[in-house]
Structures are given as C-alpha cells and as structure tokens.
Amino acid sequence: MKTLRPFLAALGLLAFIFTGCEKANIDVDTTSADGSATGEVSGVWAKGSTQVIKGDIIIPAGKSLTIEEGVTVLMDTLAKPEIIVKGNLYSLGTAQNPVRFTVNEFYKTDAKRFGKLWGGILASPTCQELVLDHTILEYGGNTTSDASTSVKQGLYKAVAGENLPALWFANVNGKLIVTNSVFRNFQEDCTYIEGGKIIFANNVFYTTGLTGGEAMNFKSGCVADVAYNLIYSTNTNALKLSNSGDRTPQAYIVAYNNTMVNTGWRRPTAKGGSVWVESTVRAELYNNLFLNTRFGVKRDTKKPEDSRSIFKNNWYYGYDQTTVNQFQPSSDVIGGVNDVISKVAGDNDPKLVNYPLNTPTNTSTFNTAWDFHLQAGSPALTKGITTFTRNHANGIIANGVSYASPAPSAYVGAFGTK
Image 1 (cartoon, one colour):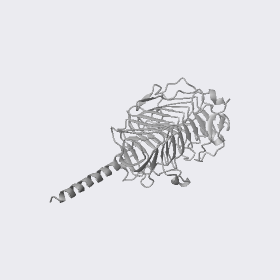
Image 2 (tube, helix red, strand yellow):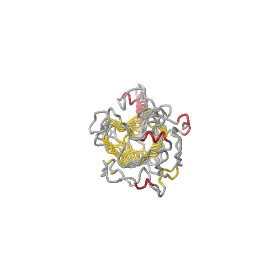
Image 3 (cartoon, helix red, strand yellow):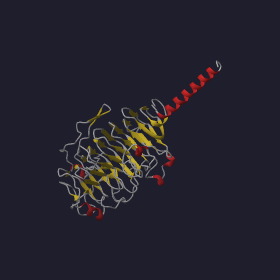
Image 4 (cartoon, helix red, strand yellow):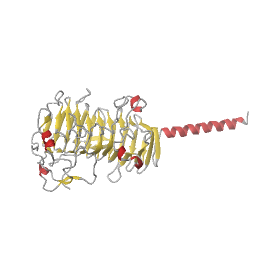
C-alpha cells in the first residue's frame, strides 16, 4: 500500500495539471505574447500580438478585455466565432498600427467578399463600455443557427437564420465609442445599435451587404452623434434611424458632416437609399454630402419621424437624371432648409480631389486610392452650418478617457481640403 501512495499522488498531480491546462485554454488572459482563445477571456492582449480565436469567446460581466495597438485577432473560419461582450471591450489601435478582427489572407477571395467567415461583436445589455478606436473589422456576418452562443443566450435577435452584424450594442445606459475604424466585407448590417450614449466618428464603411443591410442602424434608447464618416455603396441605407423597440430614452441622432456615396442601389426597394427615418425618431441632419445615392433622406410615411427633427445644409449631387429625380422633395423624400439640390443631372459638382463621379452605382468595389477631400475652391467648402448642438460635445468618459463628438465644420461632407 505504501508503494501505491506515491503513484496515486502522481496521478492526482497529473490530473490537476491537466485540468489546469484545460482551464487555461478556456479562460485566457494574454498579457505579453501571441495566444489562442475560446471560452471566457479578459485582461490584455498585448501590442503587436496575434490572437487566434478558435471558438466563441465571452468577456464576462464585471471584467474587461483591452486590445492594444497592432493586435491581429484572427478568426477560425471553420468555427466562425462570435465575440460576446458581457463586460467591457476596449480595442485601442493607432493610425499606424490598427487592431484587426480578420481572417487568414487565404480566405479573402472575391467569392467571400461579403464575409460570413466569423460572427460579430455582440455586446449584451450588461456591457457598460465598448470602445473601437483605429480598429478594422472585416469578413464577418455569419448566419446564426440553433447552436449559436448568441441564440442560446438570447442575444441580438436570438433566432437561427439571422446574419450577424459586425457590431451589436444593447445597453441603454452603456457607452459606445467607434472612431477612426473600418467596417468592410460583411454580409448584412455593419452595426445594429439598441441603446446607449454613442459616438460614431471618422469611420469608413464599404463592401457591405449582399442582399440587405445598413452601415449604421440605430433603434430606440440611442442618443448618438454621427460625424465625419464615409459610407460607400451600402446595400441599403447609410443610416437607418428609428425609434422602434419601445426603449427609453427616445432615439435622438445628430448626424453631420458625413459623405455618402452610391448607397442603396443594390437593393432596389422603397427603403433602399441614403438615410431612412421612421417611428418617431428624433433626427437632425446637417452638412451631409449625398453623392449619387439612391434617394435623399427618406421617411416612412406611415410611421414618420418626430416633428422636432431638423434637416439643414445638406448637399446633393447626381451624375444622371434618374438619381437627380429621386432627390426631389416629396411626401416621402425630405427636403431641408438651405439644402443644395438641383433638378439637372451633373449640377452641384462638389469638386472632389480624386473620385470618378460616373463610377457605376451598382458596384460594391472600393478603391482605397480614391480621395474624397474637396478641392481648393470647391463650392461645398462654405455651405455647412456650425451653430447646432451635438449630444456629446462635452464628452463621454469610457475607460477613463473623455471622448467628445467632433465639432462641426463649415464645409459639407466628411472631408475638407487637405
């Protein structure tokens, strides 16, 4: 019996080690090196590291995950992971070293240009703060099944058969900051936001939405400033602004100095267009550039916007007559005060630095060499307004940092002169 005791003790030690290793694979705090993760994660993913996500990961309530600059978050295309945020997520890239949520280069083919190779970032109502700064999200938007973690946990729409957005946020008391980031190659919606104090600024959206989907989709509970974003050829709208969902507070969105190009043409239905407003949303739109978009600002005539909504100093350009005709104010197309809009194709050329104005409107191909800045002497440089009030001019504090919505500019669109 005495000789068996060391052997049994050794077995117990091995069992403990095995269990510990298994636990480490599930609950990962990567602080200084490359790693892989599935299950619960928190802590820090260190600057420049590569984190291979082999299955759904969950940031537990009360914990945070900070992703430092230059981190590559590499998704397993067989597992097609979802990122569930119950705690806080801070993705903090820089202009030189962005954070990337992506897949192996091998999978970035034209056949997969609309992604579906992983899920999305899904922030539950317990998520207090989520920051995406200088972050690239691409090739996601997988379709849910009964086995999806999001469906099992009642998140997003909680049913099988839904194409996930790149980002879902659902805490009316939470804080959401998305700045200097890129959303591309997603199956449907880029974002679907159901509440919070929100800033979306200086972002780029392109090659998104195979058969539907908006760049930014806001519902009741959202108080947001949306500024200096470039939205190119979304399948449906650049912005869908709605107070649906019966959450408090009422959705109140101030969208200004955005550039929208070729949006809505790949979904030729009533809703396809540039900005859609409905269901008593309180919306204010200023200084936005609508460039060859399908329709101008369009309302749901059966469920219109709040009567306090304001539309001013927006600029419309259409290369052909079909586009220009659909800009004209009517019962469902909203004309604003001091809008620059013509009835003649080719009028109101904003004089961009480098973008062919006759680019086909039904293409989703984006050329990163295009430059949407205004030329010196552009008539759009002085047509903006700066006297309106933003929701978050005094800043939203997240992760100890104050993020203020940027001040409006006197020019129209997201970019002035270089």
